[in-house]
Image 1 (cartoon, rainbow, N blue to C red):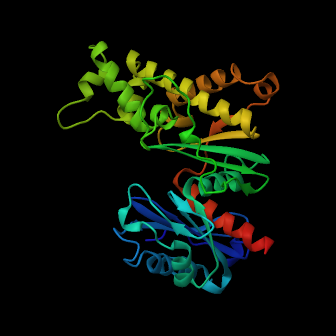
Image 2 (cartoon, rainbow, N blue to C red):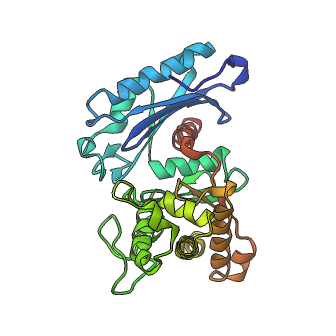
Amino acid sequence: MPDSNASNQSDFQLPLYAGVDVGGTNIKVGVVDDLGKTVAHSKFPTPEKCSDGAFDRAAEMMDQFLEPHGFSREDVAAVGLGTPGPLDMKKGILTAPVNMPGWRNVPVRKMLAQSTGKSVTYANDAGAAAFGEYWVGGGKDYDSMALLTLGTGVGGGIIYQGMSIDGAQSFGSEVGHATIDTSANARTCNCGNRGHLEAYTSATGVVNRTAELLPDYPSSKLMDMVSETSALSALMVSNAADAGDELAIRIVDETAEYLARGITIVAHVVNPAAFVLGGAMNFGGAESKMGRRFLNETVSKVRSAVFPDVAKNLVVDFAQLGGDAGFIGAAGLARENHRSA
């Protein structure tokens, strides 16, 4: 069922915009107003193949959101779409998503436009999330912002004065694939290359690094957490760190150091006004003592590595929109295109 409330038309500023955030597990659909306020949102499992009615279902869900508030599809000016890459943004084609073989070489922009009857703006999912944070989240007070999403992988999005830096081949802002280790034994990234930020600061990277060190810490609480039926996870590391586990705290601090290397690269190349950290791999985030330690260690390491003027004005903080950033940002990008048309 849609996540909605009893608000009516007077609570929202027209026109409305819809956002569709396609993920490997779920597709999130939401409608927001002209100020970025969410009217309603929900999600449904991602079908194995795009052709299995995915966008027809999204369009139906959009209508379900509108009706209780007295709106119709005519009140929706445009629709935004975010998907994982690789993709061809200009042609509107999802080319080769790693975890979605049934969605390869699919003209997703055209299909969603046909299902909704609306113009569709297409974006990388991390770029859409970045725009959401820039518009109404952790970056709303800045004219430029970089988002790093720390999860199973590491995504990135960079917004400069309202524009998403997408690149000539739709690979712009892929911060997770910045090289932070050029040694011969650098870790292998999920993409197959070595030394990328993702290999060190993703949940996968955290688990791999912890597993390698665990035999050296026989008294670690993680030894008791891991069993034949309970595999090591980044959440376990976070919980153990909160409990004062030496190994887990070491992992938190080392992850902060690796993340700082990636942020330093972006700070010197793009120099955004703020960095925002999204995704679930944040050691508890702002509400956690260990999450705050992770953030503070990251900031300290970046400040020691960048130019003094950059260090003095450095802003790094946690994201504010959580899992809603993708559909909000996709809708926001559609709004930008509609307003400039």
